[in-house]
Image 1 (tube, one colour):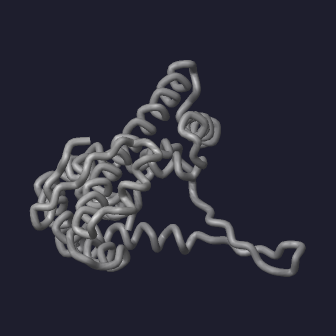
Image 2 (cartoon, rainbow, N blue to C red; image 1 turned 45 degrees about the vertical axis):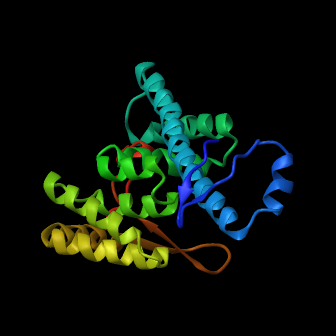
Length: 226
């Protein structure tokens, strides 16, 4: 691993990537240990970004194969197609099915967010912050507005603050940039929430069920709608 100058011109030491590294790290001065940790943190983020995109590629090939083989894109087959795609990713990478689905969804959202994708690949921000930004600004339909939102959201992500605070700030920005769209999305959400039936179940409690027409959407195309 090449040395890297970080902070006050402190070089991150070379690692052998063997068990010998533990003893070497244990004797590092604090400045060198900090430089090493920061260097590894960026590299870790860079690796995760590429893992997410690779996982999505694995899943997409399953969609292509199943659709080409005659599966119809409707609600009756969505479970089978989603299960096959996420199952393939889960097995290939040894992660849970929900984790595989989350990576596939994020990859799709990033396909329309080039600036955020570049920051993700560069290791500028952690996975969760990239996910927050992508989930919230992908609803912006105007290309120029969305491009501005990407840059501004990444600036907000640089602040030393909680992820929830970042999400709230990005949500506020999206509403300010597209108030009409935000109002439409709230109305759509309200309409969905109102269309609910409540029934008794054997345990003596109540269960609710949202009644609306289902439409098949690949799991990697399911972004948040606010």
